[in-house]
Length: 129
Image (tube, rainbow, N blue to C red):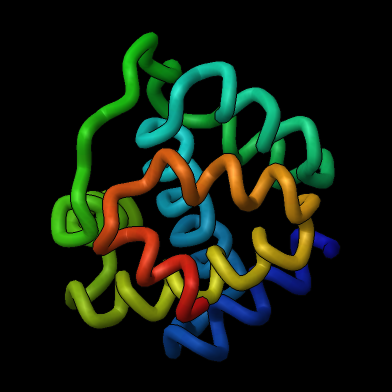
């Protein structure tokens, strides 16, 4: 998966006007997911991403030592705020598009490892994406 393809997907599915805004929204989802995972799992997931997405994954504030306990509502609110989105509904659409792209990019084993660390409500969002 090329990063540009993911940005296009996010742009179309979440009704975001520019690829740069879609890139910013993609980064917000990647960082929220990174912070929800253990540092070991986050590193393993990042290793399977293309270079540009690796940079987004690692961008922003430094990763934390302990996972941030976020359920779906908090996760989506964080994405909404970090990406400057209009609504939590738009954050959900962005998250769905990024999760779908990650599921295509990651090995099945790595995707299962990520799901194992998500709370039930966020697992449901991953499964629907």
